[in-house]
Image 1: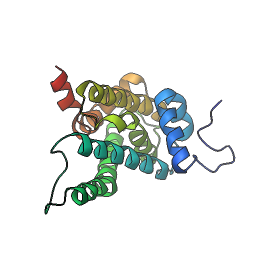
Image 2 (image 1 turned 120 degrees about the vertical axis):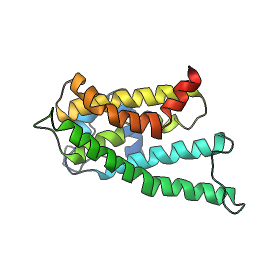
Image 3 (image 1 turned 60 degrees about the horizontal axis):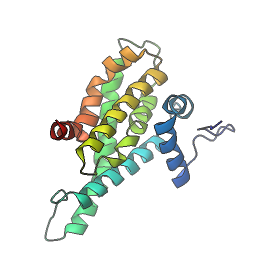
Length: 194
C-alpha cells in the first residue's frame, strides 16, 4: 500500500523523487492521494509541485509553439528563461493563492466544517498535475489535460473539505474556469477541437 506521507510525521517525501511520486499518485489514485497527502499548514510541497508543472508546461509551449515565447532586445533564449522564471516565481503562486481565497469564499455556504485555506492551496496545486502536457500544441491533449485537471480539482475539494461531488462541482466552477479554461488554455484548445 502506497503511503503519501511519512508515518513518522515528517510530511510528504521531498525532492525530485517525491515530486514524481506525487505526480503519479495524483494521476492514478487521486482520492487516496488527497486523503493522505494534503496536510494542514503544509503548503510548501504543493507550491513546489505547481512550480514544476508550470515550468514544464511553459517551457514546452515556448519551445514547440512558434512565436509563443516573448523576445526582448533580440535575445530570445534569455527572454524566454526570464519569462518562465517570472511565471513560476511570481505569477503562478500569486494566482494560486488568489484562487484559493476565491475557493474558500465559495465553500463557506456549503461546508461549515471545511478544511483550511492551506489545504485548499494544496488541492489547487496538486490538481494541476495533468497540465504538465498543456504546453504541447495539440488541442485534444490540451483539452484532456484541462478536463482531467478539472475533475481532480472537484474530487480534491470533495475529499479534503468533506462536501458532496455536487457541492464540490458548484463551488469549484469559478476556479475551474479560471485555472483550466483560461490559465492553462482549455477554452482555446476546446474551440480548436470543435
